[in-house]
Image 1 (cartoon, rainbow, N blue to C red):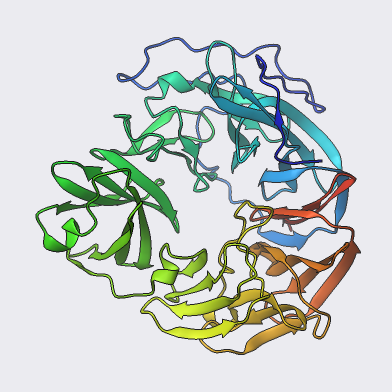
Image 2 (image 1 turned 135 degrees about the vertical axis):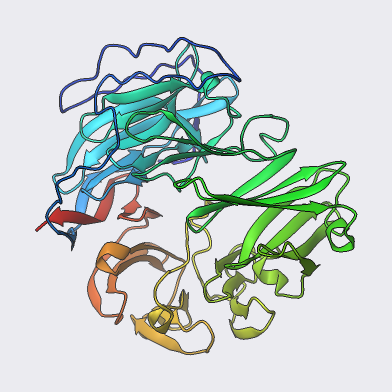
Length: 489
């Protein structure tokens, strides 16, 4: 199985094969205006009309680590919830018009039962794209009359609501942001794909009704938008005026903008005339790094959110665009890759430019898996946190970020290899997949606080994907899933 195989172009249609109760025969298309004007009223075939919380306090929940479950081969996890349900893409995207679409299949993982499946879900990196938003899975589904943004019920596979993409008033090439959750559906429209679109850079919807919320981020010119913790940070360019930096909370709608005219000497240093690409990253909670990249190289400035002051960037370029890196703004450190293929060694840097330590060629830190970036910062309290690596004679080590010493080691003396990992925060458990031999994959479940090995599996080579509540290893023969599940006590 090639998880990134492109299927033949074909006219597509969406179908949900629900094992719980069957999907309605067809989705009713919405009427109403397109583009600007009143927000569309989504249809709500099923489900509540409000996302207001219940007035009755629920029992205290508790997290459990679910044992490994085996599912059919070739499944890549796309989204999951906290009740043991996960949605997978089997790959094999099909091109329809200018976009790619793939199937999405949902399982009750602990039970090993398929719940439903959708066809022709809009794809990214050749797999279906979707995000979990409480009781629904949000995705763009193809219809001949026009794509729909749909909130699909996690349990039944039936649509709770649907809104024609053409009536949302946002660039149709938007991305459903990972900041989508039980409180908000967040859509991000970023340059370069949406550079010429006049719509909002971020649009938010109610996850239970599909209603467009008032909270949105509108910026002048072409905007580059990224996720920074629980906020969106963005930088927009206007050819005549300058830059506009913004940060936006999609739940509360709170926003802050700073105008940076080209006339400021420091700002003019990141002005580009041809084919620029901008980024904005946290340097710390109150400081942003703004980066412009062109064919001639990169330039960077620092910006203070409170004062709007711009200053020269004097930090570590390795953390901000020069290399693949994992960044920890809270600790002002990054783990930077010395080589494109992940085998040239890795280094831990202070944002201020100090190199704390360097591991030699052959050290692996999981910057990407099968060419697709999967890793995130192993985000834990600093006294028991660090950078995860597989290096030298040891299968897996948690290295202190500011000192060249391991916090803990698993598989000492067993050799190292390419690594991918997922962190199940609810149960404070790390699950790592290490290529421990040419035909062998070792899967480790580890207590993240102590490094104590919970269990391990030795398997044939497998691919790796993860979410906040699910870690998945798959090959053509089978898929192994381990989840953290929230249960009522």
